[in-house]
Length: 76
Image 1 (tube, rainbow, N blue to C red):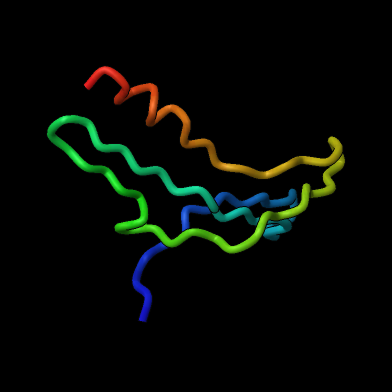
Image 2: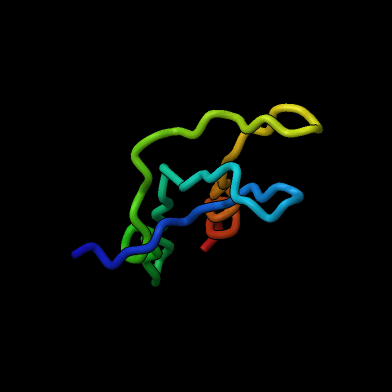
């Protein structure tokens, strides 16, 4: 049994219904000098990309960014 979580974001409409969901595909891994941080230790990657969601404001693409992790740890 897989006990790892999905790192997901949800789009909820004005009626409270979930109309879109994106689960992160690319998990981060950083290894500064004294520490290893591997997102895959506690998160499972999704297997597919979600299409943009139609909203009254237009189409909204979904995603979760992890690039900041590399910037934060680049000098460690």
